[in-house]
Length: 141
Image (cartoon, rainbow, N blue to C red):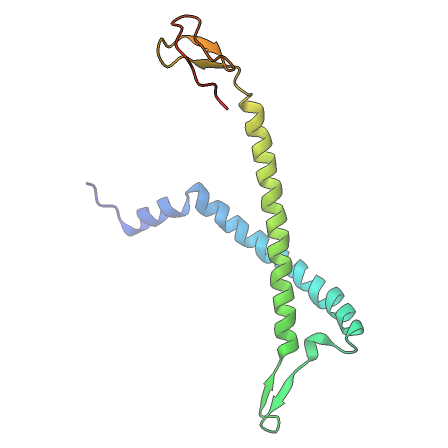
């Protein structure tokens, strides 16, 4: 087995298609996160704040005479942000899978024939007996 240098090994790893796809996905995901953050902070947070009579992301709890400030409103908005990102990614993956499955269905039309397991002749998929060897066949579902 030939021993590769660390640089050659790294080059082989970095130039694989799936690594490049992952890098592109991370960059697009980071850019998309900015859009979702703006949606949460600039649109949803003010609307929720209006409904709840205050700035939701500014809600906090001061402990020990102000020495500790727990910003639970910002944490809540981060949770909303996460769920929005997860929801959007879910719909993107669902759409991609639908497009992939549509292509597979076009490539694989439904079978109309089957092979007799006894004489290997081609018969109708609905046949219960092979006309060539007269064996009983279980029809395919």
